[in-house]
Length: 355
Image 1 (cartoon, rainbow, N blue to C red):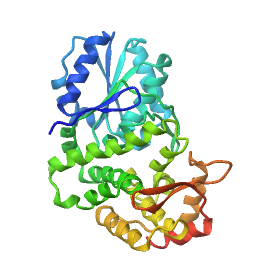
Image 2: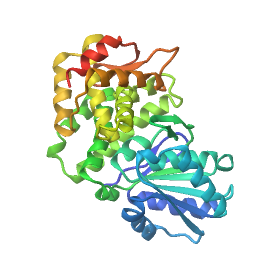
Image 3: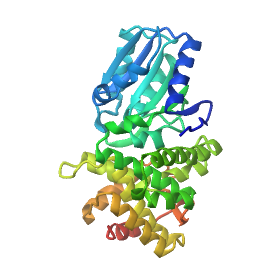
Image 4: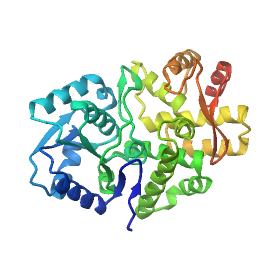
């Protein structure tokens, strides 16, 4: 199935075979001094051989490998990559190609945006989460300790290549993590897409390509209307306010299983639906339907009152806060969201009891 490139903010998202055509054309036209391929310890083994087989260029290639995992998405890793670029002879006419999941594309996009005040980069997301989330919007950045995405810039790549053959390298858990963002796109923007996602178990691999494409289209339409997150783009944070806090809490807690991003966001979306019933008129039957669907796909976690208190403390680091107030994205209906909602702390404690 031929999927046309999606035009975004100064670049395009290319799918499958068209991605290789774009990359070869870019490398031929730009005459880069060196090509740097950044991978992590997982994609170096699982994805890099496939990529190098498809690559056609006479430009000198250097490979930089970082450790895999959210715990390495920090300024220490950035420093290592900046030093590696310098020592391997990178200059302002070099290009950085980032082959990996969201940790790789977020971190490497930030590295490229800041090295010598900015060099060209291309993102090739290899996880489902990165394909439908990190592929659009130009957000780059790293974590500060366990606090998610506290340091970064918005800067567009030269292009994004989504090649769904890389999905075969994912574990079942990593694949499922990406589904959370796809469910989110339906909940905030398209009832029709939400219904398609609810029928996921009845679909085959060709349907998945189409659903990934439509998910990217939904996110891109939102980002194009609000590139700097002044209003509409905030809707993409649905489920992320509490989701990020839960993810950070589990990352820093010695007695908690570390949650994948999508697992934490799925919990955050369930809680946001419960808050929406209480505050924005979201129908109870729709809330129950959403929660049933998300609980089918994602593992559930319960939190003690003390843990909820610590999670609430982490909310103060959320990037969407304004004037000391935590701002939530809630739903008025499936496909209709409302931003900048103030939520009483007592209600947050209350909805955690529904998990």
